[in-house]
Image (tube, rainbow over all chains, first blue to last red):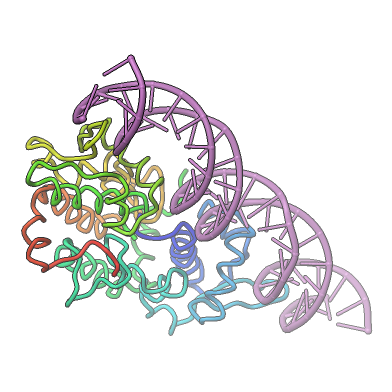
Length: 145
Length: 145
DNA sequence: CAAATAAAAGAGTTTTTTCTCTTCTAAAAT
DNA sequence: ATTTTAGAAGAGAAAAAACTCTTTTATTTG
């Protein structure tokens, strides 16, 4: 609804990696795909982008894989969304008008501003590392089954 | 972002028709398409759906066209969204998980609940007829140029 | 009743998004 | 150094969404 499917996978993958690499171990691509129910090759490509933008880290070779370092753990979900979907959910017009603005607003402009701001605050205040606890405790899930 | 493009056109068209048919005149499909900057045939099909679901009314023959009666004017934007996009923005999981629920929540479930509820309230409380005034006064716009 | 006007319907195309497959490259372990 | 493991890259197929075109049907007006 709010994110592209690609972005949904991205967020789920990052949260998954953050949890699994909490103790320093690296996670392989197959395990990630299985862990979040996503197409292997598709999530591989997404992670390549996230890796380039230093949202996740990766290591090659035996026992290699993806992980998330201390720095990246502090990043917000908004950083992930920006890499994948850009700023459209933060700035785009609810009715799809390209030149909708404060001075030339669509009829829903002010109403949507409130919603967009709420999304913005939510995504900026949630850090990648925030979800480990509830996942570990089995209080939240990131996978269909 | 929140709506499909089809749904954006639908909302804009309905608001346009509501304004133009305020005095009882009917609006032709070409005028609607021009008035909201949309593909003629595409919006025609969308309006057929909305007409079937009685969000808009239509009349055939010379001087025919689309209009919105008193009853329909009281309907909310949520009614339009439901016809076009269904309930996904009201109920769907932010991370795209099909079985995300209160008892088996995704990590962002409670945060997104707040956002979804805000969207729900906004769309339910805005009626189709609410926007005439600001459009008439030139305080809001529904068209790119 | 005929002509004019406009909606209804449906087939079909284009574009975008999602997803797959194959090949290549890097690097760690032995 | 060689093997193994895994990521990087790119072409491209499949599916979904957006959009176009043509034909048909309805109905009002004169």
